[in-house]
Image (cartoon, rainbow, N blue to C red; front, top):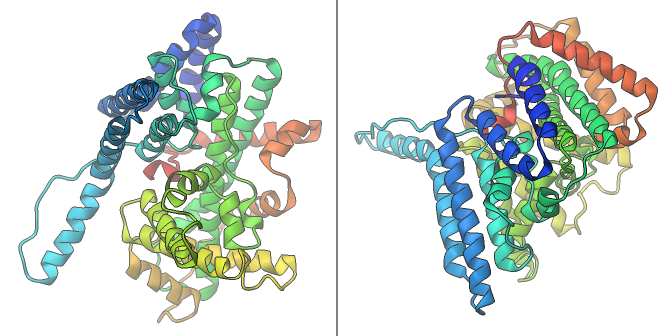
Length: 461
């Protein structure tokens, strides 16, 4: 089930909210967990079992680690159980096909027979809830979080449907108190509705419109440079508004039921360096990688060379987390390369001497190049697209541009570089902005009636 669907908007959400606010507080965590299982299992009910297994393993591990530490033992075997089960499931479902395909490519190269195995279906959101459950076990082991009060509360935490399938990644210690004691106010609910509406408008009216243009560009052969750049720009806008729109909706839904989730985006396309970009883009993931991968690897505590290696390795694995494809690994290596370059110059870009507007523009171009790798089907496709961008392609194709593309692109530019963040606008909530938002939201609903399927890009990651 997706947020931008009639089933969710007209049936699931109102029924859930009606039941949630009718029942007493002591039952609300259970209601959230059950509703979340329905939400998650709408496509494949059997995948609910997979998520429940992770939930049960990490709940048990957290309890046993706490008991072991009370006896002056660290409880490391239980931590290893959590790591092996969760990363094992993630590795199997997400990377099995990739591993088989890569081996078959090698076999074909050497004239050997290939392996014929059934394809594994990737469970939606497994990357997000796996990191989320792992953060609980690791934080309990480190003494940074107390064990969860009840299994019902932990089921609620892991399956929490607003951010279940595409984030933001919510660490247990940031919502532990909210699972037990969270406040429900009209002001919170009102801000939640506005956040949801803003996210829906960003997703439907900007991301989806420009996404169609990006799909056409990346499916075309040998575009002219202007059209190739336009297609890359369309995808750059699409992925931001798709993902940040989803995050806004998730934060809004959380507020409607009393939760306050962390902000996941902070105007990333205003960054003045790649280091700055990763402080602003997908903040919940970048902070997770920093705290649970980069720092445990040694961070910057083991010398200069080791720092660069740790940075590069963290981004490489961050790229692999996004998907089982060499293009994601290359994208991660690309990001790591620029982080290392900037670390060499004191965490600033090599163009830091230029005016801020120039730094922002150059960083934006570097980000666009990275998104070409991210969007391409394979490395050859990415290199062919770069050929088109730089006029090295043999022929020059064009895109079918429509006025709606210009309107959505203009809206994207205004939102990115001309307005405050959604969170800032929520607290101001001026009447003109709220009125405009209602028109945009209703425009989104009308648009939904003319399309058959509205996927979110990050569901595949």
